[in-house]
Amino acid sequence: MKYYPVNLDIRNRKCLVVGGGTVGTRKVMTLLNCGAKVTVVSSDVAEKLQELSDGDIIKLEKRPFQISDLDEMFLVMGATDNQEINREIHSEAERLGVLCNIADRPEVCNFILPAIVNRGDLIIAISTSGKSPAFAKKIRKDLEKVFGTEYAEFLKLMGEIRNKLLSEDHEPEAHKHLFEKLIKRDLIKMIKDRNIAAVNSLLFEILGEGYIFDELMAK
Image 1 (cartoon, rainbow, N blue to C red):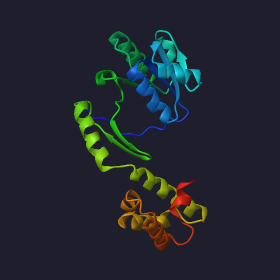
Image 2: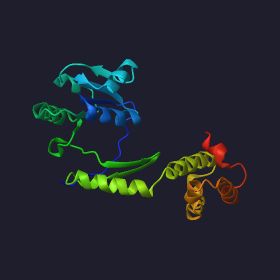
Image 3: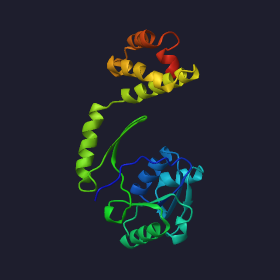
């Protein structure tokens, strides 16, 4: 199997999770973090999912799965240990053209979930095409040691710099050499070392007045 790598925008899209246990809860949290509108269908649910339902953060249906649950859904995630239900979810999702992932069952998925290193806006996805999730997990742990929280701060800073430049009527193409200079001058390491004075000095040197780390990061 050769998978096509893609990042999905699921903001405000209707997504279904079938199963309310530990795995289902993990799927729900990932979907919520990406802005999805989540419905959970399960006879039994974890305490966290009940809390999310009580807070109107998710829609919860405490009952067995029904085919009609897939109506108007953008994607569905099966998180049950019932293989008959998993096959039913997959079959109906295929019929409707709905994206479908069944936990730990790549043979009944039309997309799989990679192992992820998440550092703010930096998302590093690792996939072994379903051959060895354990090895993907190992690589994720290795990369987490390399890419620390400074990368999240760095990308937020770069985003705010870009927004400020655009607000000053700079053309996007004119920014390229500025960002290349910031990257080549070890801005990430300065942030990691919390050497904010050096960061501000570099910002002034390359961008001029009005670019101050604390002010940009506060936006």
